Length: 108
Image (cartoon, rainbow, N blue to C red; front, side):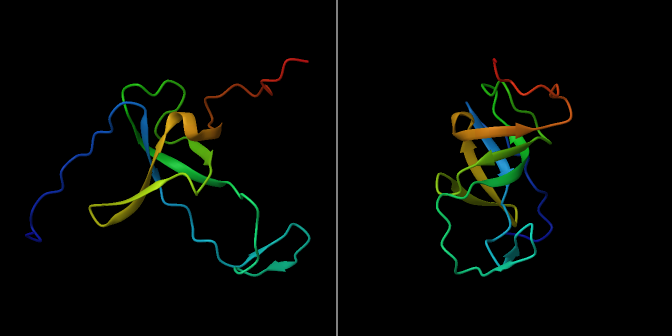
């Protein structure tokens, strides 16, 4: 591949999402300030990532939204030197976006 070759645009298909690769699971701090080492086992910890592109069948998510998903259910891909994750819309657990109304969505 030539270094001066222009980058090609990416189009997602069907219900697929292209999101930024979440930060690696390294050391982190709890809300109380306790250091949690990277080797600590965490049962099914979900991860947040920013949406970069969406397929034409995606109905609820737009580029720029942040989505919550299970890191075990993902396909990693290198696109033009950047690491991304490909997900299906049905694998998303929650969406954080400015455009969403600030209601809980619960029927009480």
